[in-house]
Length: 223
Image 1 (tube, rainbow, N blue to C red):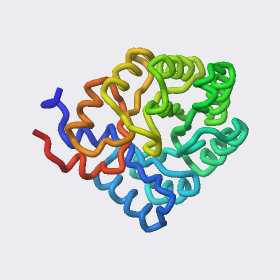
Image 2 (cartoon, rainbow, N blue to C red; image 1 turned 90 degrees about the horizontal axis):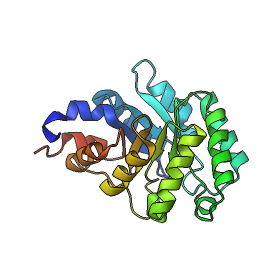
Image 3 (cartoon, rainbow, N blue to C red; image 1 turned 90 degrees about the vertical axis):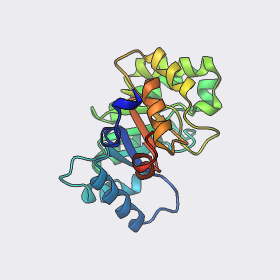
Image 4 (cartoon, helix red, strand yellow; image 1 turned 60 degrees about the horizontal axis):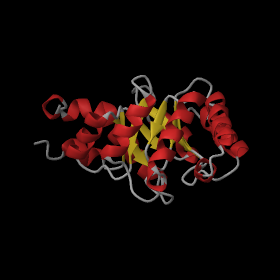
């Protein structure tokens, strides 16, 4: 598949990401200009930047993805629902939200499922990606999280926030793809900084790539 994915095609898999707390308006302008220039699938931003990103990207087809419950996932479910609703009002077209990892690890599946269902409902038919934070999970946790995400109506499962331990790995992406089946998206995110790694994630089953090094990825060594 390496020969089949050229940089132009790869750009359509990428959510160009800027989630650093110190990001400024000028950083956002640069992010959105790059997303326009390279035709990335979307930009992924914190909630306070959703409205300005929508304005900067108006008319170009690049989606605005908002993170919710980021990066810990440990706030109340009600707060995540409100955050989702505000992001949608501001124009977000997709929601990437962090599962309650502690509740998942203590096998409180009813809580986790209820939260997923709530965020999916609050997103009002926009695609929702459930972030697992795979670096904190056992294989069994990862499988259960994927199953709960599908059951709760999420359209994607996503590996990592990029702020936790570790990032996307090929084995995790393969496991997630195998668990969710062919009809649910898998977003590989966290530590993807070059073309070769991005292609390996797609070969493993990823249908979306989250990266802040997106320009370097598609301009990099493609051998």
